[in-house]
Length: 152
Image (tube, helix red, strand yellow):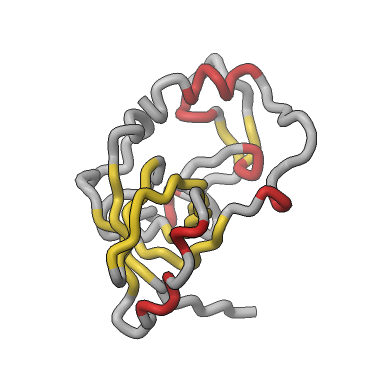
C-alpha cells in the first residue's frame, strides 16, 4: 500500500540542525501551505495547546534504525524504535505537543516544537483534555536523564 501525503504547512524558526537539546527558547512559526486556506486556522486560538505532526525530511534512509541505545549512550538499555522518540524512524514522522502563542492570518506561533526550519507539517490537531492520558504516566528512569536539557 502506498500512502501519499502533502504538507499542510511549513515550520520557520532559527534552528537549522536537529540537535537533541535546548529547544525551550525556540519560537516557531507554522505557515500554511499555499493551497490551504487561512480558514483552516479559524478558532484555533480557542485552544492553548496543539499537536503538530511533521515529516523529518532531512533523515537519510541509511540512518533509520529499529533498535539501539537512545542517543548511542551505553548507559541506556537497548531500546526498540517504537519505545523511543528519535527522528531516525521507519516513516520519519515527528509528533510534538506545543503551546500556541498566537495566530496571525495564515501563520501561528508556537513554543516547545522540536523541528528545524523548513520542516514540512503534515497535520495540526488541538489538544483536548478528553484525549489526554487519564492515569499515571509510566516511563523508565533513563528517559528523565535523557530529557534533562531537552526543553532548557
